[in-house]
Image 1: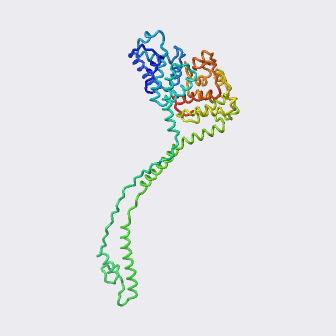
Image 2: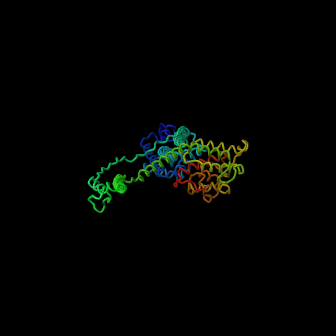
Length: 437
């Protein structure tokens, strides 16, 4: 979007500041403050969007009051500048804040796109249609870019090389041994006959008169001397034991980390393909994990609502916009085209979702994501808290949901409406945890 939202509203004549640039600066400051609020409290995104998209929003709506309070901080005399509460200006400020918040925070962007697709389908903002279309196209492109990155399946998987540094080589220091020749000579001399210096260890035989005995004794003594001498030399040259536990542990850890990284690369690269495979299986099976029944065994509108819930549970937080179209086609595939033209009014659909036994999983999900409804809010807030507000009349229904209670919906439009609300509610839920089933 090349031009800021507030300027587009001014050029389209949707708001009038009488050419006063100082007033525009005050509106800009207000939009910036509200955008900061959205970043801190993304759960407000859906309500801000619904209010901003509805030209018929009541001046007493809590979100309008919140925007007015923020504007008063920048413009103390704002109440004297207009004959009544400037709802059109506040709606423009809210949209500007939503666009700013969506650019800064992905969760706000997802909630804005999902909610705006629902709200604009039943809004009467023809003067602002082009502004909304431009804003929605820009933010939806941003959301799709992130989703496609997570869903993409690359043609090739790259695995980084094994990172391992072997220990430094330590050169062996050779031992230099010296033989005590004098001691060795003395031992050999004792072995040659009875004239050795050690009288207790002499060879008692002489070679000239006892050759056979002398030879045997000399051989025994000399072999013992040499064996003892060589044994001590060999023992001294034996290498010291080497502790390989450290290098082997490091190598084991490096290999484990390498394998773990390779598996993570493979898992991440094939995640998108796995999601698409799961979606195709779900669409062909037409079986509801939440109801434990075939969708064909359910009322078409109950089936559509549960298909929205089940698809929502199959998907990650960030999904392409085309998933809504995928859901619509899956719902239409439940029955013949003629059966899919059946319509019901929004009021009866809401009542069935709040009270029907089959809709209990949807009510549980709504209660987990959202708080009890006050002011304008998603239908899921009413579904999750059926005791709140009781039975709404036509005026109350529209004041809360932004659509007329008599609005006619087909199963596919009902299912996609709930699906977008579920996606928006999950991404901005304070808990940020997977839904308990």
